[in-house]
Length: 252
Ligand SMILES: C[S@@+](CC[C@H](N)C(=O)[O-])C[C@H]1O[C@@H](n2cnc3c(N)ncnc32)[C@H](O)[C@@H]1O
Image (cartoon, rainbow, N blue to C red; front, side, top):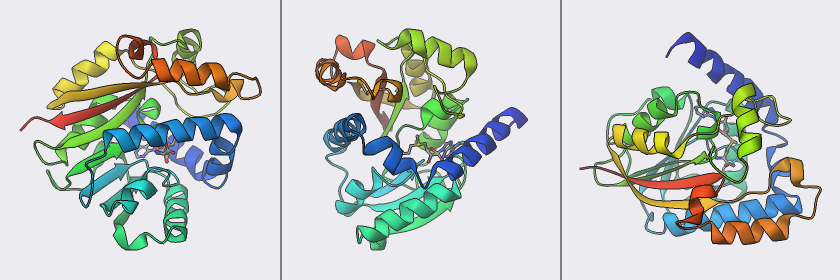
């Protein structure tokens, strides 16, 4: 890993270590946060319906918001995160849900350097992580490397060419999220399509998702966002959705 990328990793780690205790409360308990969580859970359940009793790697699980529904389906999971604080919180949430027996390992580490043999997992998932990565193409190659040929992985990214373009452009200039001291970047869909191919993957499904930005949570926008989100699931309007969920298959 080059020096800049490892510095970025350590700032991500410091940010998420500090954020781990308040993350669930701050992000997912407001009205808008509950709506975003509910929609994202629905997308996960649609796209990964056939992930049952499989070996699954999750990178950047945070507090295990998406790990828990996958564990409920008896998937045997390995959770890797750069933040030890997040891993502790994930383990506590999984324990509280009585699902620890399905976890194979918790590992602290970086997506750029996954400590697993090629083809170790049936599936891999990394949600709401790529918008914090400086080298998404390298990260995707790592995820593709560790799954079996012919099987699928799910990641999402923040789409620069979306309804939120004016703000996204500012974020890309500052390389920081709005009101949060964490690296943030929005990608051009054409570039993401290129690095999906470069990782030896094919895109199986792309699902658009419109979230309520935290800056707008105080305003009565959830109704509008709900409609925008609903019409953004598929082409042509998925193109303008601020988040793209990409289900990809590793070419055999
Ligand atoms: C916005 S949180 C998303 C957490 C969870 N996936 C969710 O959507 O609730 C981003 C997560 O990615 C982790 N992360 C950031 N950079 C990483 C890296 N280079 N390698 C592994 N994990 C990373 C953070 O520690 C954090 O847990």
